[in-house]
Length: 230
Image (cartoon, rainbow, N blue to C red; front, top):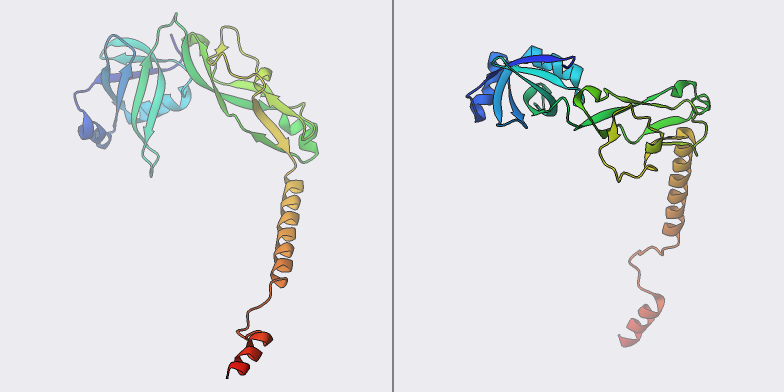
């Protein structure tokens, strides 16, 4: 059993007709991974609420025409303008089998770190990671302590992740030294860029001053030669 539930009904609408279900307050979906692919639809508000809570990492108990299926969200199609949900894809999973899911990485404690007190900026370069676990063990997020960051030399690596019991990284070959986050001095970098831009501008002015201007006058030697020919 999961913490999230969604009731759906089997649909016969496909293609443009399926997308038109939104006008009736419904969302078309597809459930993969079972004995056969299931085309379904569900109320928009109920679907949106469950997706916001479960995300891509928590199992959802789907009830499709009185048949129950545990699944996780694999993809959500959004309208590029309104950002409203257009369609959803679910993957059916077994409660006793490992499944892969994308889990957010959350950095905690940075505000109390020496780096923060020194007015350094936190840069999180990896915001999520794929993990593998049984559906009930899939974490909603992986928290990493950033309170010990102190200087621009300090970093947080994948090896710093503490995985809950029963959870493992989906990619076994992922380099443990891969950087999740680091800190930098935004003020110092801005001053360095400004100095570099100023130096480049000054170098350009000097270079331009060294190039003779072309005023259209002929060289003196060429003028004398012309007079002799005349």
